[in-house]
Length: 258
Image (tube, rainbow, N blue to C red):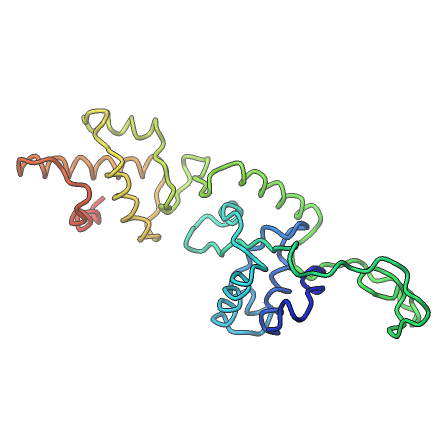
């Protein structure tokens, strides 16, 4: 957050965008990465409308002060891809002035002691020193460390993470890859040849269900749906004396029965 506070006015003149950036920084890690508050959360934090928040985020991204980060970080915490907010990384190497660390002279018109962020450390009014509380709602130090661990694990995995528990139900996502054994078992059970499910069929199947986030299933369940659909298309094409055309989108009308 100190980086956002120290941005010079000429770098970010829009006060609303600055407010959004300050609130976004509250949710970033110590290195400025992994911030993923929703637009509604930022709207509550800033008092702006969600629509304005989205515009300001676009402006901040276009100005190079933020950029889209590793979206798998949000996937670790939020199962449904359609409810995952965008993960942003703050570009802390841009625009900020280096915080002063040398002692100020007696003629400093601010009258502040040379402490970090220019805050005077004295307790002139008798109050005990304030604890170093966080304004970013990120929780305890243990929770922050866990977030960094989660982010590191997510970085090692693909951009979208399929649940490790085969019993967990999930919505289809754009980078889904069928479980090799699960798909092979379903092909065998269906009595189809090993190469019965081409990449074109998988892409067409995914494209349809990505647009239907309310449909969820287990890893094995998705393999079953895929193979049953391919089997149906092969039977239909065989009756017409031709090979199945998986690029033809008319098959989508029959998927409601799967």
